[in-house]
Amino acid sequence: MWLTPGRARAYSEIFGLFGWVLFLLMLLQPYWNTRQASGPPFGDFISFWAASKQVLTGHLADVYNASKHHLVELAEFPELSFGDVAFFYPPTFLLTCIPLALLPVRLSASVWLAGAGIAFVCAIRRILPQSWALLPIVAFPGAVVDVTNGQNGLLTGALLGWGAVLLPRRPFMAGLCLGCLVIKPQMLVAAPVVLLCARQWRAVAGGMVSGAGLIGASWLAFGSGAWAGFFRMSHSARETFERGYVSFWKMQSVFTSVRLLHGGVVVAYIVQITATVLVLAMVGWACFRVTQRKASLRFQGECAPEIILMITALPFCTPFLLDYDLACLAFPVAWLLVQARGSDWLPGEKFILFLAYIYLFGARLMGLMTHICPTPVIASALLLLVMRRVLPDEFAKAGARLAAVFRRGDSLAGLK
View 1: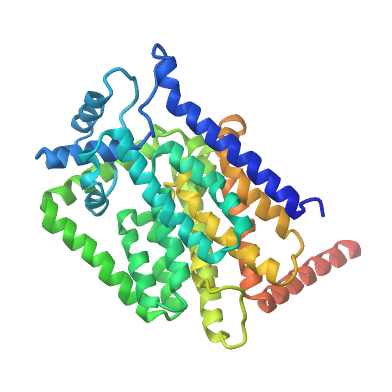
View 2: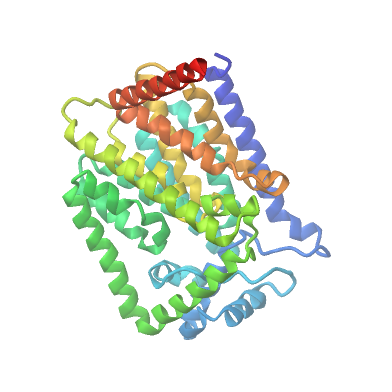
């Protein structure tokens, strides 16, 4: 096989070096090229920092006023030229942003991203504790993309990863982690289906406690006005998204895949909803079967396959999805690697894992140049790999039935 362990490590070194050097150059660019219009360092983090500044200075109501929010951003970076980085997040996420403006932007972003990054890496290290795995984890393109954008993909990825790691032994704690995803609700769509179908009642209870706790805390801290402002802003965000004000080639969802191919908004929503329902039905059924056959199934490591299925389904569960949101795909990739090392590599597994590992570096560029979004295709292949590992007997039977259908079709064609 061409993808040997040595080559895999070498590719990880190359991608890691390329990604982190590119990130460093992006940070330094404003210092040597002040004439060129550019954005603030760490990209979207300026929105989180500005929201914190507004709360700390007593202007909470202005967080969900796009023009006033942008004035705070411009006041911090008057020498730069960049578009409005609006705050589209619920008050639950605003809770996490409160202390950010206590530090200067660059230092605050460094602390924020380092903290989320450490939690993210520690979760993956629970799945892949081997010393050789540290470099590929740190070099993972999804992590580089998130840090470059100054976004929260590592934070949400860490919550998902710890949910997967903790579920087998501490389901209530796992639920607490998953419930915290109310800070970014679109990342939580698959969780109720998976936990209910897997009959993980303690995890459901934990999720309700942390989710309701964060919602209640945000209500007490900010009042109903913040939630009203968020819902008004959500309407604006939907219009911004549907009209392509956030370029479709930056997005990675099924919806934007259709829009890139010049499909209309209604058609895109129909395809998106259909994909979401089908994937959730498939993942829910798989979790139900895993629960039924738990005594006979054996997996390498102590990571819950149900949450791995949930993470792998996420690319199909929301129309608003960017590449930094997909840092969480590191967990199914790591889990599949552990299963393969504990048994044998299955056909096509190495190649698909390799694609899933590297593609986020070029996802936006491919969308821009070809009007094709790679995420639904690669995510579908990754989901099938996970399904094949989770339920090998059912997968083999389904493959045999499909092959029989094709053979029957070829026979009928021959008769004609």
